[in-house]
Length: 278
Image 1 (spheres, rainbow, N blue to C red):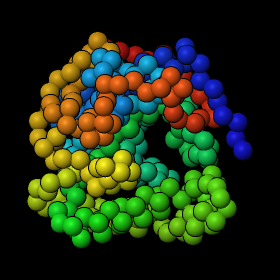
Image 2: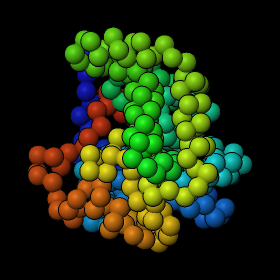
Image 3: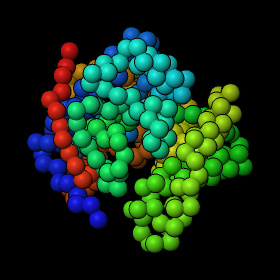
């Protein structure tokens, strides 16, 4: 078993500064090319509740619709600061197996437990890509099951080493034999079919949502963005953030118990750099 790295308070602050640097770069490109995005997850919650990072949070997230992400990806080819950053998805990294993109900070290391063999391991900003979810009782449930299979198949390279009990490792070993590109073709086929018309719900297909919103979150959340303060800078978030955060977290303004106020990502190696801000 790999030795877990215990991140210090000073390292956590520097890690957050690097993630802020990446948010600034993403926001610069999105404003220049009029690409809509929102802070997401704990980053959106941090903006609303803390006006910045949740003090113990060790990652950062944004979300955008698939059409916006494709524009962002195209813009990054010519406008991303490639001396500092690398946009990682399954197209740019032949070993990448996650259903969302990451903006990586070069000259850093942030090695997740069970992922030491992967090449691209820098500090990252998650860029979640949202797609429509079919309307209708049966279609929605079939779609949810297919997304579950896709998520598990993509995770299988890690799961076959990390999971307990042993029988799960064998299941992941079987799933890991499915060619990676076939899994992404299935995901893209699902997205293309559902994105043809507006639907009630939207979700990131390879992210497991809480049970009370397991099929997705209201489409209306994505209809309008608004500027919000985060670490003394201005980024975009859902104007109707209350609906989004309420569905995702419940009473989102309540702090978790003290014992849960800790970094959540298990890592085995950490190397940081000094961020650069314009």
